[in-house]
Image 1 (spheres, rainbow, N blue to C red):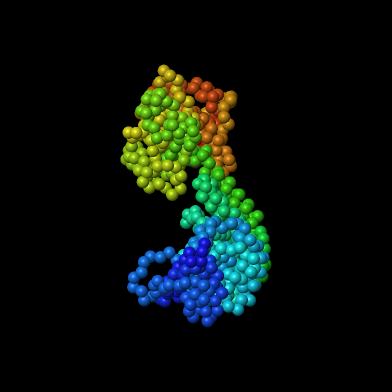
Image 2 (image 1 turned 90 degrees about the vertical axis):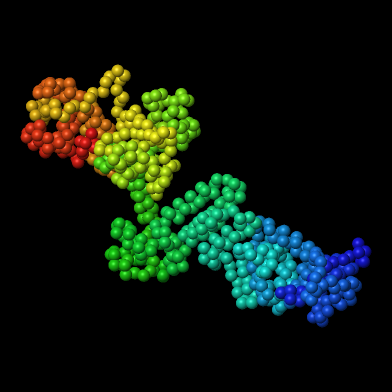
Length: 627
């Protein structure tokens, strides 16, 4: 290119643009102007246009602060008269693009604060130790302006990009750095010396420099994780994992969040973290920090709790006053807390197990309801949200609905009916439906009550199952029988009618006599003489359920035998032996005693029978709700 063909636009300005001069420079390209202006001394700066002409250029002023109107121009070079900073606009645009690139794990970020502002430099070819040497060189600069700082970086061999410039490039972006040097205050700060929360914020901002990825909840979790666990390496790994999963559009971010939250929740006290304990002065491993409130709670549960002291020692607490009167931090040994967590998990598993929940629903003393929903497995998904008529049309079920099986459902919720019971069963079902569509309980994890779900009601000791249908609720007697473990009557066999109360009279037969006690026992389930609560506490729920189901069958057999052998006045005496052989004398006595206890007001029972009942232990069972 010939000298006369070179042409560039130079803007000479002060920092606030209250004074400027737009100059057309011929005979030099942008790089040559930058090189020439960078070599100026103070005398040269008094008249920049004249200085350029002395170096072989031709200059023409196009506009200045007094010019009212001038056309649009594309600048090549900008010179700041306040800071003596020379900027090649084209090179600056290229830097702007490079400054948007993701930050590498090996890049070292250095923030430099000087008298005219600050810059955040991404240094790509130095180790943290190498950057510390650069900071030492920067402190020795006499004139700490932006140009001298950049010259110093170059002389130290740094390959750097100013990714954030105060008042300029990316100035509104969240800041982060590995090191910060304030040349005005002569202070150096290292990120690893900051609090875990500040370090976590820096990790997040560094990862999101090129692309935003974290949700607010994820950011809060990462910061809280750092604060509570005080492990910055694990915090960095967590943030990088979530960032990767989010940017790749994978589902792993949710799992990472769940795992991290579980680690936080595993600590004994949500109000204090390991970093606070370290800052307090207690550095021994194997101790978890506690606030006073949690320390009192754990001490009252007979767990070993300690006073922690700033000199790193601890004192085992022997009395509550050592908690209430101490103003420091408390702790519990990690091993003791792990044992406590294991015990709690075992208790929760026992309390929340399906067998226990189902037992509480079907055989509990209070009125309850249960919500059953189809298992979330491929084989069941085609049936979800389908009504009975749709299932019939598709040939999946018949009119008797016996294909709707408990084995295909999960019990997802059990609740008390109090507050939901209406005057009729229909009203109760409607109240349950409204509750689980409008106002879910806080601990409910299923979907809103919908078609194909089943509601089981336990009212007045009786259970019933109701299919949520397209047009209301449809009864499921077969489902209920299978759930209770009751065999379906054979086809053609009529179910026995309930006895008429006015014709039942057992006063002529002494049920505690030896014809029951002397009958030889045959093969039948062993008698289980404990309550449901006892069974749950001792892991014997299955035994309890087998026992209760067999009791129900025994009760129905007794009622059926009485109907067949009672003529309205007398009860045949040879009916006991076959019953005892089938069910056992202990079980028959238990069932009869339950019945008599609950109906002791009935004058048809003899005085001797009522006296005999007082000798039989029924463990608080109710004949009405349990049998």
